[in-house]
Image (cartoon, rainbow, N blue to C red; front, side, top):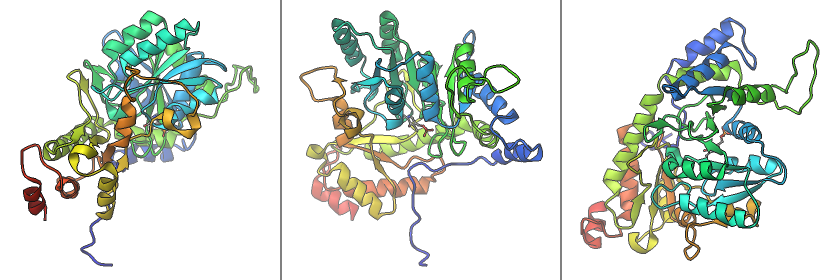
Length: 406
Ligand SMILES: *Cc1c(COP(=O)(O)O)cnc(C)c1O
């Protein structure tokens, strides 16, 4: 094999701390190779402690995936067949699947330009329109996209005014804050993911969080086959096998110790990309409002083909050729064949949905916290070459920029 072959740069690979081994070995030593066990209890307490603040204690239930936590969260909010559930359109499919799986119908809400997250204006429009039809949604599912919390300063009062509870999909946002308050504390219930590609991982797992201890207790009950208290196996409702294993929770405990470092590194990577590429004409990074402290789980940006002189897809191809893994931003749910026919509310009927543009032009760059500065520089160089044909905002002529990039 040639040694000068550049190594593949992945989008967001796991990044171990080394401390995971201690907790996993403890599990082996004590033969807790089972679902549940001391690591699970401790991991729940430790995540809850991170989310809690003075006077607002949080309660957690560790699950086999973030999707399972969303499913249990919707059940906690009483979602039933025939219900309407408002849901951010610009997200990963796992946000919306459990809505359908409960027999409820998602109604999608557009993003706003300022945060790329659920538009408070579109949300209000949906609530008014549905009320005019005599309908009230059972829940609102917000998504803290790419690790950035939603505009809860606007969204929370709207949901309170209408009496509709919020499920916060914070799968990508453990360690983020909005107005200084941790993401995962804005809904009546929230879900985190510890999939291998997230900020921290348990190799696969999730966490339901709530300020209501009864919600977390009920989730634990449903996630362990809903066994009624009895010496034999007694069941009065249908449960799930959704609990996290004691081994996975051990990995999670070792990861949680370095959460702040992982978030700091992802934010640094975002800043490096923005410094280098933000000046190119037609390039716009996901904005971070003053009230937001994002994890920047993935660095996301849009490339306006009319101004950049290149396209998102050309950029993806150029990066792939350099063995750099990048991805389009999420394809909105209302554009998915799976959800064809579902309703969608924008903040201005006269305009095309914001999230359709964010998908058409959007790209996520490699953002793993284990990336070296040299890795980031390699991605930047490949991006600059593709953008070189366009004009930079610093007024460099295309020919000069092209010559410079050779
Ligand atoms: C990863 C992710 C999920 C699903 O989490 P899993 O642990 O993979 O089930 C849900 N929502 C969003 C926004 C995600 O990024």
